[in-house]
Image (cartoon, rainbow, N blue to C red; front, top):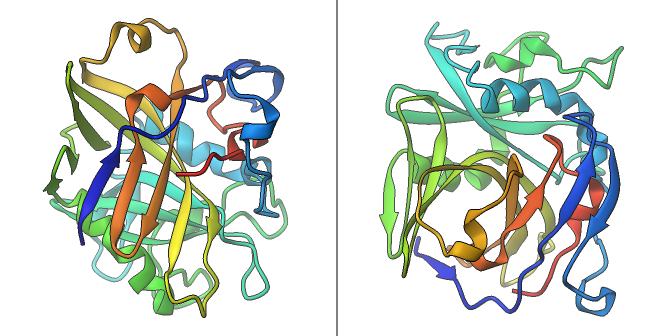
Length: 267
């Protein structure tokens, strides 16, 4: 599969949000785009529905993720890297997300779910990969859909950017720009819009949520900010992954992004 940056993506959505720590509340949103330039939110699922993911996300961004997962069958210990969410729940499945996990130099992934009796809390048993039993969470028939992303973070350099995992147990995407290199430390991938099962040209698009890593050799206009988290759009279509350039970067002040982050521009 080939990949390409869309550094010329038209315009930047610069969001400045006042939140309350990591509780996901947002009191004000400032954006440089007019409402007419935004597409309406198409996904019936909302970021705020995934409050139960915050325990995992905090584990990743706080560096407390090492060896926190286990493949029950092989007893191998793994390190959670990031979560992918947005498609579920739907008419075929309930509330769940996919967790990607580092095992030595390989990446594996499986479903993680909230507690049945406490749906706002993570079911910690699903941090482990169960191929059978009460907490069975192998991806099964969905595996082919999520495998390309795992293969990229196992080590892939394509054109102006590079996917990989660092020694601290973080998945990164490095973008090479005219001013140097910018590293994104990924923690959440949101799936906002996708083609129908019967579509000839299949695609999926959404947002990448990340922390800035080192190096961060970006233009001066993007350099100075106290925001803890950031976001950019992506679009995967026909095997080609496009990621909006650093000039489109959005600032996010809560660990679980607010629902307003689901607003998208055309790529």
